[in-house]
Image (tube, rainbow, N blue to C red; front, side, top):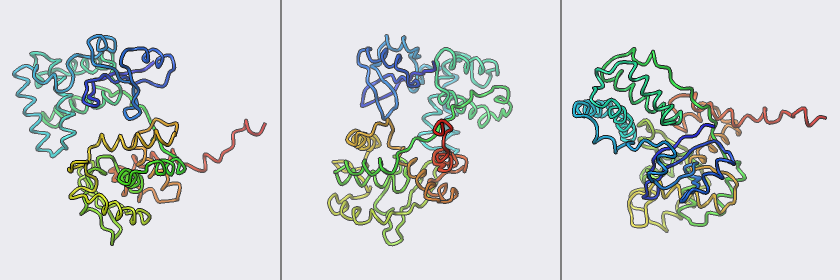
Length: 350
């Protein structure tokens, strides 16, 4: 059975997240481990970060930022140049951190050998080590390869390095969505005005959690019934349509909470946090007693799926979601195909 584990920071604690397909035997085994907990937000079980747990789940002790200080002096210079090149390319802070950490792990793996003199065979062995020894997920392997490819293709201009190294096949996952009935139930159990407004805008505008917390008061245009989404994923600006049904509630919210800059602010002012927004959704899901383990991003998936079911053109949905590639938006056609769902199984005709 496929599984993977990685170090995470969860509620200000170092934890080990363990990911695997739903399997009762595995669930029973992990339940009895001391300190184990299930997180619907993470979609994983997580345990205390201890030496015993690291050994049991084959976690490399040096992961992410912790490895950066242990890189050889020559490779430290290479890492510095690597980071500068990412900055010059104008990549986001999130991408910079991910690439830096993944490339740093590779540099530590090389020890005294420098990345610019490294042969293709060594890179291949490193990727196989990540798959076979560390048992990393396909997504993490893809991220690791992307970080290496950036160095060899973008920095060193060695275009042919990765032609000889195949990528592991990605797991083809479909977006997980709520029915409109369940969406309505989520809103009904969320009685706090701020939280209710936040969830309704997430769904009604098809926003990512990072986009909802970045919304500013000036971004809401109630005359044109539009919302400006500034510097979203991929540093793309876009406009979303403000639902008519939210307008009165939005005004009531503004009168009661009087936000100063961001539309949703914390208890003591300043921008609302991603984690707080996720907790709002988690609490709503728990109160609604909907038996699904989905995160707040599922509201965005549901928005796109329900638009398709209303007959909205896929190109307009692509624009509203801010997808660069239409292939990303086309995934929703596999979820919302009403015609396929109307097909009756031959079993029902017996």
